[in-house]
Amino acid sequence: MKLKTNNPTPDKVIDFTLKALQYPIPDTADKTSYISSLDISNAMLWDMPLEERFVDSVAEPKERENECAFVFEKTLAGTKLIKTGRPGKSFYELLKKKNPSQAFITYHFIISQPNYELNEKVKLLHDIARGLDFQHVDFTGNPSATITNSNGLLEGELINALVYRLQQAAGKKSFADKVAKRKKEVSQTFTQSKNYVQRLYDHCPQLVGKSLVVSDGPGQPVKLATSVGRLDKLITFLEDDLLRNLLMGWWWKREHLIERGNCYHLVLFLDGQAVNDAVSTLLHQKYGVNPPPELVQNPFDTMIKDIGQKIYGEWLHITDGQGVCWWFTAPIPTQKSLMSEKRNFEPPNSVEALLSFIEHRLKQDLYLRLERDPKIPHFSMGKLPVRVGP
Image 1 (cartoon, rainbow, N blue to C red):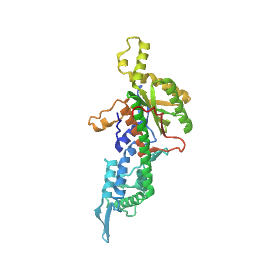
Image 2: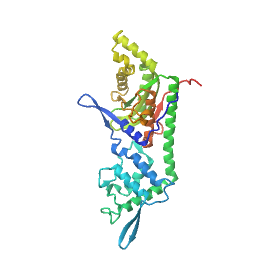
Image 3: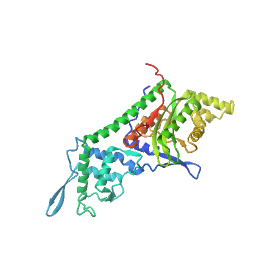
Image 4: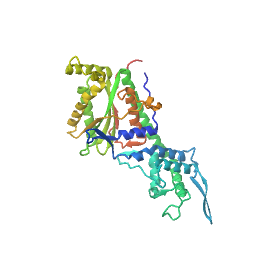
C-alpha cells in the first residue's frame, strides 16, 4: 500500500509546531502540564501565515507593478484620499486579524531567540516595518489620520512606504532564490523521510511506532557534537538491547528549547506482530495464565509503559543525570482528520499518524527553522531495510 501524505495548510503546521515546542512539568496535583518554550512566542507565531500571505498579495511579480496602498491628492486645502488600493485593504485586514478586539493597533513583532530563523517573507516584512518604526505607531484604520509625533505624516503614507519597500526588496532575484532554497530543502528532506517510512512499511506491513522527545536537560549547555553523540548512544542501546528484534527503524529531528537545551523528536518504528508476541510473553511471565484483560487488549500501550522507564533510565545514565525525555502525546492530524468535520485522529501509533507527525515537523521549517550547523545534521534516520517486492 502506498502511504498517503497530508500536505497540511500553513495554519495546521503552525498549530502543530506550537504543541511540539513545549515541554512537560509536573503540577501540584501530580499531573503533567505542558509549557511553551521561550524560544517561541505563541501569539506572534500564529501570525506568520497571515503575514506571509500579505507579502505575497502585495509583492508577487504578477501582482506588484508598484501598486500603491493609498493614493492621495495634495492641494492648498489639504490632503485628500482619492483611492484605496488592494495593498492598503490587505494591510488593514492583516492588522484586524492580528488584533481583532483593539481599536488602536500597534504592530507587534515575533519574539524569536537567535536559535531560530524566520520565514524569509515574514522576516523581510518585520525588518522593513521596524525600519519605519511601526512599533511606535497606533494604527486607527483611517489612512487619512495623522500619526502622533510624526510631523504631519499620514497613516496611509507610512503604509505606502512599507508596501513600496516590500515590492522593491521582494522583487530582487537574490530574495526569490532564498525563498526557493528553503522550500526545496524542506521538500527534499520530507521526500527522503517519506521514502524511508514507505520502505519500512513495505518490509513490515504490521509497522507501528511511537514518538518521544529526548533533551539535554535544564543544566549547563551541551556542545552540539556531544549532544548528538549522546543520542547515538541511546539509539544503539535501543537497537542492540532494549528493543532488539522489535525496532525496525528510527527517525529524528533536532529542535531547541531554552529550558531543555537541544531536543530530539525521535520516532521509533516497531514490528507490531513482534510487539504483540513480546507483550504476551511478558504478561505470562509476570501474571501466569490469567493476566489483566486490559493489558492483553492493549499490547502496544503495555509495551510502551514497560519500556518508558527503561529508556528514561538509560538516557539519564548517558547524560550524567541531566537529560530529560517524554513521550509526545499531542494528537497527530492525518488525512482523515483534515477532511473530517468530526476531526477524527488515526491511532497515534499507526504508521499513517507517524508519517503525518514527520511531515508536520519538517514543514515547520518553512516558517521557523532551527539554525543549521554546517557539520552536524539537523535530522537523521536509520538504515533502509532490504527492498521487498518489485
